[in-house]
Amino acid sequence: MKSKSNFFICLVIVAIFISSAVKAGTEEKEIQKLDNPISVQYLKANLRKSQPRLVLNSAIESNLKKSLKSDPVVQNMYKAIKLNAESIMDKSFLERKLEGRRLLGVSREMLYRINMLGIVYRIEKNPVVLKRINDELIAVCNFTDWNPSHFLDVAEMSMAVAFALDWTAGKLPKSTIEMAKTALIEKGIKPSWPESGKDPSWAYGHNNWNQVCNGGMIAASISIAEKDPELAAKTISRALDGMVQALKQYSPDGVYPEGSTYWGYGTSFSVVTSAFLESSLGTDFGIADYPAFKESAVFRYLMNTPSGWYYNFADCGDRRSNSGDDILAWFATKTGNAAFFEKERFLMPAEEMGKLSRLGGAALVWLSQYKESEDVKMPNAWKGDGSNPIVVFKGDADDKHDYYFGGKGGRATTSHGNMDAGSFIFELNGVRWVIDPGNQSYNELEKTGFDLWGSCQDCERWTLLTKNNFGHSTLSVNDQLFINDGQATLIDFKGGENPKASFDLTAVYGGNLTKAIRSFEKDSPVSIVIDDEIETSESSKLITWQLLTTADVEITPTGAMLKQDGKELKIENLTHPKLTFTVISLDPAPMQLDRQIKGLKRIELRIPAWTCENGKDHIRIRLSEN
Image 1 (tube, one colour):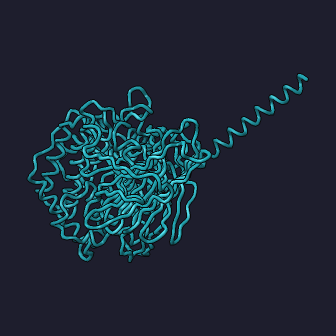
Image 2 (cartoon, rainbow, N blue to C red):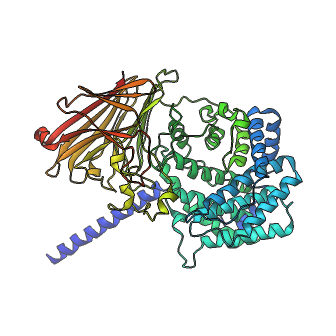
Image 3 (cartoon, one colour):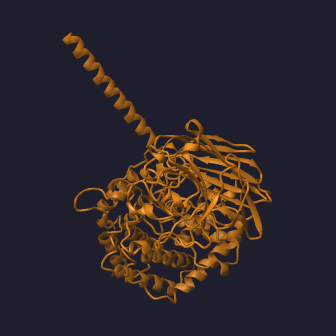
């Protein structure tokens, strides 16, 4: 018996070992690594010796100058850059002034200034512009530090200083060059290597910090590679190993889990990092071709709604700028897809563009490289799976109703995430009828001592209307918060003329429901049906169907009527005719710290759990043109 027992134990151990090995192998396949041959020897052999070499090099610059003679987009954007550069000449030099715990505004302003001034200097070699760059560099390099406690500040400042050194290509005074390189080492790169010997959290993190900070450190390392090759090599090598943790978040379909605003932030730094690795080392080591990275351009494109707003889930801004999307244009250059190249916006009068993006100088380079090779029709029904899955239904290109629907799953503990699983927005006829409350100022909250960034179940973040489920168009149960780490998954999607998608929301309710499936169906060119299939538990007391709107609301016998901008939208209660909608005013919002949105209100249909026959119920609500 003893031998049989030992034999059985051995089998179990072997099975566990095999299972672990299979799991490890699966995880290894899921995390595709970037090429990483970086060493001191590799840099000495492969790093371009002449400057410029960040985004620009001699061949790329020659192409840029050629495009300036013939390409109307490049000509117009350069005109806008020159106007921006002229406005900088009248500004005071930057000072080390923190906003709360951040120097980030100063670092971003420096990156913007150098992008504008630097490209103008590359094209025109104006000594007045060169002097201004010199003076800007001296100012920031004399800061006591670049605020390493909030490392985004260091990263953006490092990239700015690196561009300034590179695009002036040795024409600055030797004393300034030496000062800047020393600052990049002492105030930029060395603080990224903690004395504890541990990697900083951002180095292998899963969000935009990874992309921004590693990108900044690579730019700085290229700039000081000749001065300190060992520091440069180990920093670039760490970055290439770490960046995959952020790049893998785009999988499988290109959704950026932190929303469209943070797509613009994190992706812009991965894009510019790819560009200056290619220009300085001849390869980006696989960044541009990382799985689902290029597909994220479709996500970005679809987040722009007909009204000019974003689908603003997560900590996202409300509206996009009027200018062309120069980060999306990088994807146009890489794919040849005209859908990603916003030509009309790039051709708007330069005088009307205002302040350009802080990577606008670099962006001019890839605008000059764009060649249309295909005009791919964007999907009218699209799903993006992953940690924060979403679906989008749109009308055709000639849709006179400007139809747009966006719905989502996900979990609150995603970076910059909210308790918004099952929420949706809806636009029709140029009006956003169902809204997401969007984001609010971080510093305004932080300076009161508010804990904005804790994501535990009882953390303060979830008291905010913009962050909790009571500020989103979803289902709430027992007037309780969602489970913070409950994951709502996309379980079904059907495209075509009448697309439909379903999310399993069960996990966000804990034990308050035993089943919650929310489906969205575009049943006509002017309507959307929201269908909730639920099963109650012993804990279920009250199910509340919610819709957030800024429209005027009139309760009707069959539901409600929304009125806004001279137009109307009908809300039909298809399944609970004996229950009546109620309207809760959220203007002013419940807390003084909440974002105050004019006219905001929550429409509710409150369903007692005891009315659910055999513990099951269907809630069907239809929104349609009146």
